[in-house]
Length: 362
Image (tube, rainbow, N blue to C red; front, side):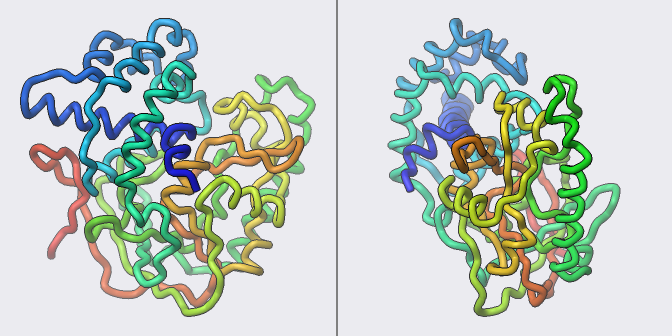
């Protein structure tokens, strides 16, 4: 897989590269009082952060200047913490039910690409090995966020995976049948619907830790609801059984070709909002995938290269990865289970760093 290509050509990879540079200039500014080229550009264009989704109209006034700023900025010495913060910022901006935000839009223009490749080539030299590693079976952690519904860790795995996947398949196919009438309507008149491709609630969905004891899933969740408390516990993953690895778009294509499930009616309007593509859509049929694999792992590299991208599966068919967090594995094996102890986490504001998930010692 080409890390430079991921960091300069995919939507979430481009945003991670941008956020690495922006944070470096933010910290330099705080330490010295100076202003780097990227922050100076942002100060000249406050409208960029204000426009929100859909910013095509600012290309002529902003794109060339952004490219020049990225081409001149100093490149950071990445740390584990800065990688994680930049990944978090990229994930936080993902929204598949609306057009891309203004920064994501600008980063996709040709005027910015040469400068982005410069940043990507540099960052690729410091790329964390864990971002492209297979699932770490011995260090998988389930996370449950504490909110009004107060779902705890034991809410996962209460039903057999085969039952969860059966209900998921039944619901998706019923929705697809019911929404077929939307295939002949003007797309603007079609209702929005579910935008995620994950195999439904109830399955264990775990991640490894990154650089410290905190599971990566604590930090990186699409459509984050602003959680400030969470619980985590290690999972017991049985020996044997194959895990399907998604490290690049070709891996997702293979899943969709081997186990296709039509979702054109379900996804027509909602994915058109973010891609402007109106055509046939498929996702993997997780019920069928589970017959051959005990789980599916989306690595960080796989997330950055696939999330939000139109992935061509056939001549007239495409797919997309949406709603799946980086480094998360969904488990289909009924032998997967929670291992004690359970750890509590809370968001703390750390001086000079910002908000951090920290383990609560009781």
